[in-house]
Image (cartoon, rainbow, N blue to C red):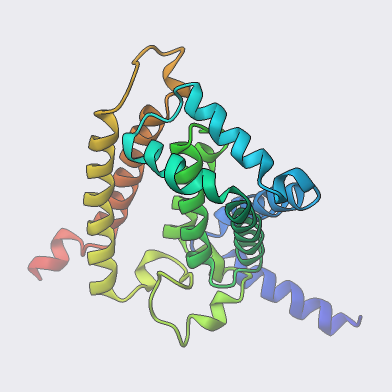
Length: 244
């Protein structure tokens, strides 16, 4: 490796790490490795691949009263348990694909949405840890567009405009109207889901509420709503720009 190659690499790293939101890159790597680890752990477990572990987990959560939303109890009973072996494979493959995509910065935002969907289901099933932490981090990564920093989305973003699939550095790089509608819609949707979750909270005891999926979701959706609203306000023109 000659000096010119090293200088080019250092210049590339400096340029990438000076982009808006580069400070979130370590979190992107952490989440990507976390999803890959979770997938690898299940691949080497024959009981998981056969559906035994998942069926036992869901059955215990139902029997223990940890599944607090009525619609999700019905979903587990009528859909998940009868198809536990198929669902186990879906989880393994999904976690692996999400982890690899987030690490590579390849269709990062689509992968993050997939990760959020899995985390939401884990929490609904009565397992908020560590999904609650993953949820908060992934929302920040989605809005921050970190997949375009030392990631393949920097190239894909030139051809694919929608931020639902590929990451774009900073919310200001989104198409203005799409960005405005997406952030405002996310604010309203998250607030509505937080309100719905609050209606199913079992306890407000500080020592017990951290294990209550409804309370966890209420907090997560409230934080997501606030984060989306702050991002929406950030992309608005300054006051003097509106009147000039």
